[in-house]
Every structure is written in C-alpha cells, then in structure tokens.
Length: 170
Image (cartoon, rainbow, N blue to C red; front, side):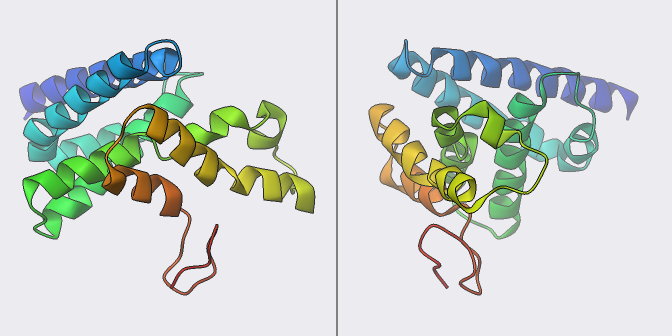
C-alpha cells in the first residue's frame, strides 16, 4: 500500500509540474502545450485512474502558490474518474480530460484582481469573470482542441437546473 501511495504521489506531483509547463507554453508554443496536455491526459488515464482512491487523497495537499495548477489537475482527474465510473468509452474519457485540463484557461484573460478577489464581485466584475468561458473557447480553438473539449470549456459553469452561465442551459 505504501509503495502504491508513493508511486501515485510521484505521478501526481509530476502531473502538476506538467500542468504548469502547459500553462507556461500556451501562447508561445500552443502546439507543444496541446501535445503535452494530450500526453498528460493519456498518462492519467493509464495510471492514476487505476489508483483513484489514492489520487483523491492526494488532491487535498497543495504546495504554496501552486494551487492554480493543482486545480486544473484535480478537475481533470475527477472528471475522468467520473466518466470512467459512468462507463464512458476511453475516447470520451480522453476528450473530457482535455476539456477539463483547459476549463479555466479563459481566466488568463481576466485581470488577476478580479479572479482572486475575496470580497463579493460587483455586477460588472461578475459579468467579466463569466466571460472566461468564451475566452477559454477562443484559446482552445487556437490550441486546436477537439470540439468536444471546447464544449466542456464553454459549458463548465452550466447547472442542470438552468441557473448556471453563460447560457443558462438545463
């Protein structure tokens, strides 16, 4: 059990470093960033998904200042776990993972003072923050992400009761 935990922890930390590298290369080397994301999603599918119980426990620990990379990794891992649990085919799990990896990429176009604001957002600030879904789709297109991944990015704040955004889909 200890060796399984140690192996999964190494893979998890390596994956977080890969997410950081992907984010750093998004605009300067978009093809490289996409390829690295594809490799990472495939790696998660073939390794960490088999140790789901251990990976979930690793999600709670974040080294200081790295939380944004761990958030993307956690959302990717959880999304892929859920898809696997629902018996989605491997290709669907991969596409969900790609969308989840880049779900918040549009926040890079929003001023940090709004993204990280702890007080309630004003209506204009909230409206701008909600644009991150559309901005993310634009960035995803520049990365040549598949349409299914773009749909994940576009709709990741929609709620089943229609109270989400940007379109209030039910």
